[in-house]
Amino acid sequence: MAPSMTIRASIGGLKDDLKALLEGKASAFQLKRIVRLCHANAEGIMARRGHLGHLIRLHGLNLTDLAFDCISDLFARDDEGRYRSLESYFSAYDIAGFSDEEAYFHLQRLSFTRVRNGLFRLYSEMDPQLARILHNIKIAARALGQFTEINHLGESCLAPSLAETSEHLPLVDVSDLTSWLSGEASGNEFIPELLGKLHKSLCKQTGFSRIVPVVAIGLAIRAFYQQKEIPQLAEPVTMMDPMSIDAADAITKACDSVRSKMYPKYVDRGKVSDEVFDIYFQVITEMLEMRFVLNNGADFQLSENFLKLMPGMTLGEYRKYHRNRLEYLARLAQRRVTKTLREQ
Image 1 (cartoon, rainbow, N blue to C red):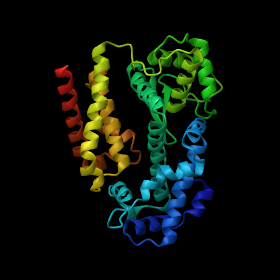
Image 2: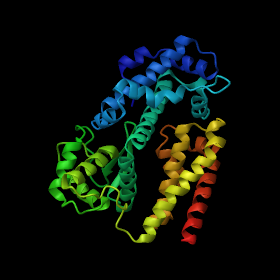
Image 3: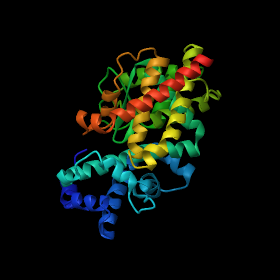
Image 4: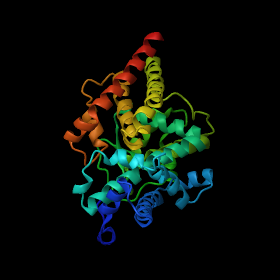
């Protein structure tokens, strides 16, 4: 998202402020300016999310506090007083060659990523049932092939694969999604079937954007089941054969295990940022699901799918800073999945 003329007028010298922060030379004013910028971006993008009221009620925080919660660890210092998360992210770029607009773009992207990851973390902590539904929706969407998973304004979303996105139209509300499901489904369907019916409703409607946040879909599915009074909220992710379901579970456990084991080596030591590390495993999970759940991973490219989630990064930067790490982590996770499935 390019900065507006108003924002351009207010970010003069931002590159120098960011450079000073990364070098440990920032004044209190420079630090405060960058924090305010990131918070404003985080709060602005959160304010556009119709499902956020559910989380506010659960967590007991207002929008301003939630935004601070999501971006706070960007500005956490280590024992040496260094901003390791920011340093890790910007280590792949030539800060000295940035314009103020480029500095703004990267801080905005960091803020949006933190919001996306932070909201999923908060949902997992405060509403584990919904977190499970969201996980199942993502796996089922890939299995169906009817949706494209996209990062829209810093949020994980689904859009019908072969339909116009109509992103100029307003976002659909959770209540509308629930109503569509009530009109198409009986309540006996599992999540993949509900996504298929939702796909049909999205394609034929013309009043809303067809880009729909995954969280909104999860809230709508849960509300639909509750309306029907059918306890299917934690049912298996798909109606596929048991081996596919076992594979999905093995992938989740393998990625969680490798991520936990390697986090200190990569993130705590400042080799990569927390955001990039999360993207590594987002790509690895998708690769493993293509291979073990959908049996369709022959053409999956780690580099291509990683770069889709890192706009602005060149192939050369990927090869220099990320390829070896990503491929190594992917091998570790794949070995764990293969070992688990062989033992079953």
